[in-house]
Image 1 (cartoon, rainbow, N blue to C red):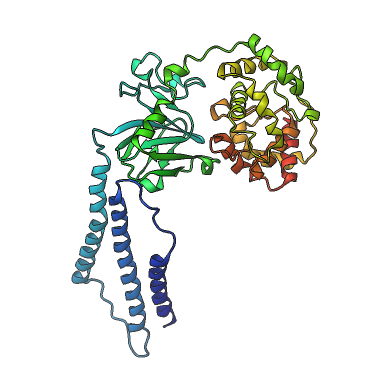
Image 2 (cartoon, rainbow, N blue to C red):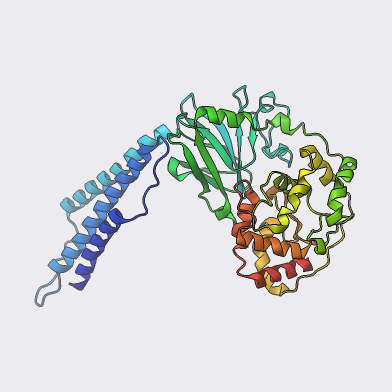
Amino acid sequence: MALAIVLVLLVIGSIVFHFASPWWFTPIASNWSAIDSTVAITFWVTGFVFTAVNLFLAYSIVRYRHRRGRGALFEPENKKLELSLFGLTALGIAAMLAPGLLVWAHVIRPPRQALTLEVQGQQWRWAFRFPGRDGVLGTVDTRHISLDNPFGINPDDRHGQDDVLIETPVLHLPEGRPVRMLLRSRDVIHNFAVPQFRVKTDMVPGQVTSVWFTPIRGGTFDVLCEELCGIAHFAMRGRVVVESPEAFQQWLDAQPTFARTQQRPPADPRRGQASYAVCAACHGAQGEGNPAQNAPKLSGQSTEYLRRQLHYFKHGVRGSNPGDAFGKLMLPMAATLADDAAIASVVAYIGTLPDRRAPATVEGDAARGRRLFATCSVCHGADGRGNPAQGSARVAGMSDWYMARQLQNFKSGARGAHADDVYGVQMRSMAAALADDSAIRDVMAYIDSL
């Protein structure tokens, strides 16, 4: 009898929790209300079966409970019962599958007037590509992928020259227009998902998958990777901004084309040497760094990382947080670099400076730090030399006191809080894995041993 009561309470509790639960669908922002309908049908069918089976089980426990002098009746076959169960099961399965198949037939047929764009997933960030004025996306091939051509666009394809490249994880879309997304992965399986849009699709290396929807509500929505793609999977996030067609077109016109990215002026180390005179006052004539000036070692650092940080300082993405006192000092210094060409030139000059190992200044437990560094090594490499493909900096042989401070800044939110600091946002999540200052010192001690 007690078991029967428990089963009845389980059914009642499940139904109450289902209707009273605060965890429900996010407000829909696309045309795919049919997706919600199919999920609701599934809930009703499975909910009915769950309720009927458990209540029947409770009834059977009471009705056919053990009684002295009464034996069980063995009935190995009952065609009427079997046919009834078979028919009800088939009906339930058909009720769940048929609506989904009808919706799927619509999902795989995007409208002809849909705006086509490409989404590229990579550990652990998003990038996007729109066709240019010719309305045709250029062909791509993994053989063409490089730091200067991250999408792998064929430079000999005239249709690719005017393709618009969005290398930040912020995508703008026009409200009310169908959008078809071609999904590519550069490394492992990812999954492009915006919960409010209701549709999502895996991104498989070597294949091009697709998904389409029509944004029907303006606003900003999170882009998630809903496929476990590695240790920083949780940090692979982006944003979709749905706005008016006019605002979208204005944003799109301001983005660089492939041809423009390939026409960047070459870096001039000699010009960069003159610009570096300002930097040398703190970072040293050889880029060796100066702890007394709170200036880290620059020589030996990756070109792409230095270029990105100077760009961040110049545009206030980094150094504008009130908690980053020393970062603020870099704002007027970066302002002396007039444009991207000047930044490229000074970085090119830094690349000519001798790479002498920075002295170790942080004491800690290197053995414990080695275990903690296992997470860091996924991006920064087991040897700590960084990985340009993932945008990670070199850490081996660099200023340990500076890196320790940056980890503290990431943990406190003094760095990485700006919406445009894509890599900083990821580092905030990774730095949170270091419980305290002692763990940071241990990691630094291990890095000093590399």
